[in-house]
Amino acid sequence: MPHPKRKISKSRRDKRRTHYKAEAPTLTTCKTTGAVHLPHRAYTVDGNVYFNGKLLIERTPAA
Image (cartoon, rainbow, N blue to C red; front, top):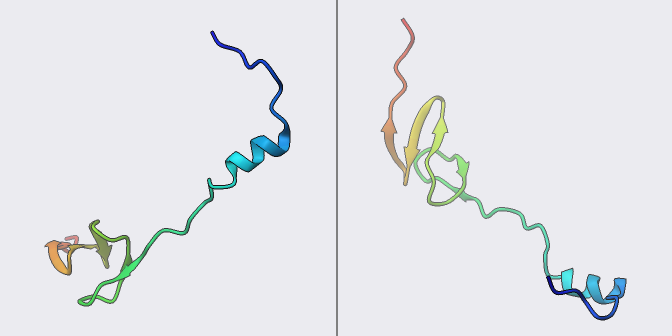
């Protein structure tokens, strides 16, 4: 197992980690339903499942 020869200072360690940031997810708005969702993923509106603006699975009312 390799070990570091010298201690890495906190400032040097933190400089390396500055590029790892939490980013807000990119969201899109559906032209058909107006729902805000993640792109390239299916989403639900009132129990119906949509993908790419088209209805995939329609919710059936409970009897």
